[in-house]
Image 1 (cartoon, rainbow, N blue to C red):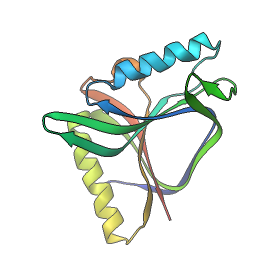
Image 2 (cartoon, rainbow, N blue to C red; image 1 turned 90 degrees about the vertical axis):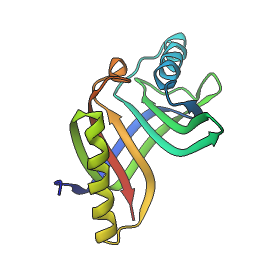
Image 3 (cartoon, rainbow, N blue to C red; image 1 turned 90 degrees about the horizontal axis):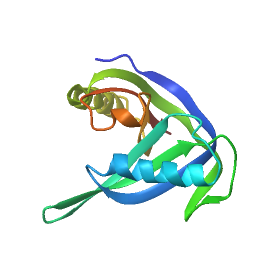
Image 4 (cartoon, helix red, strand yellow; image 1 turned 30 degrees about the vertical axis):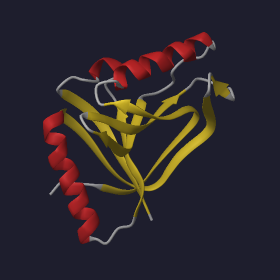
Length: 153
């Protein structure tokens, strides 16, 4: 069993929050597009990319992920294009795990986390948030370094 931290908080200020359906291989392109919008507003990314998959939408062979993308910014602006910027974003009382390794092994870590949740009768109230510590160039690579947060009651 893995060593989880409980009661962890993730607090961010001035975050671009985008939720949309994205093809499995389209996340990097979507983030690049958002980065362009950020730069056009004269703003800068001020922290790691954060993603969460809320749902999987299957329509025949077409599979899309209902994805939340969070990008911390260096200062507040109400909107970037059609997307909302939040003054604060926080996950309180989260189960936390920091992972560095091959993405294929991440599934085993998630199984261990869900085993912990089931064995301890924990009520989950957020999706799994992945804080990508390796940056945009890492998306699509085999190796990863992410902090995992799951908000619980």
